[in-house]
Length: 117
Image (tube, rainbow, N blue to C red; front, side):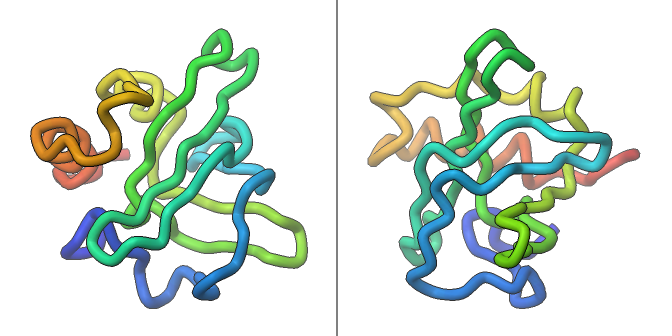
């Protein structure tokens, strides 16, 4: 995990300004959905992933620090979380994810902890 869970890792292959909407998102153990929205804001970068039928249409918020690699040729993003970890993450709240410091701390704290596989 990067030191800042809300920033992309230097090794992720992130191209500043690239549109990631529609990219397929792969967890450690399989596909979780597609990017519905993303942000490149400094210290507040994230992906909103539409999980489709996998979690009954639920959306999840993934801080950019969870991104291991971005494959622009295949339009795929790989994250360092398992499907179960993502499924158990704090509930995504579309109205709160922007500008709510407590919500960001909650989500960042969940993903910022030690990763156990």
